[in-house]
Length: 73
Image 1 (tube, rainbow, N blue to C red):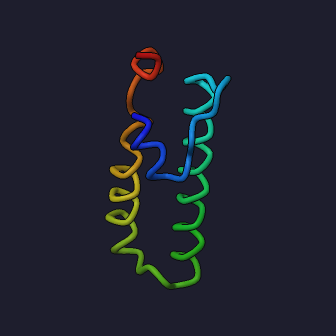
Image 2 (tube, rainbow, N blue to C red):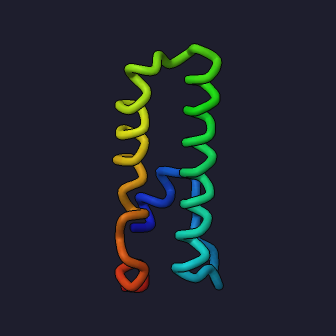
Image 3 (spheres, rainbow, N blue to C red):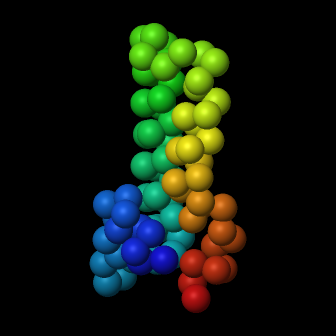
């Protein structure tokens, strides 16, 4: 799990809780989603391709789909 977090630029520090790490990852994900929406609005991503961009992004943040109790293991 640490490697997956590092892939997104998140390094766990002493005292970080699983809930805190998940929140940081979720914040990054939301930032990326907003970026995709902005790119689509500017015409950089055609509307017909937007869903596939979102799907790829969601797949890259699959860790967010794990229940929090699995983050604690």
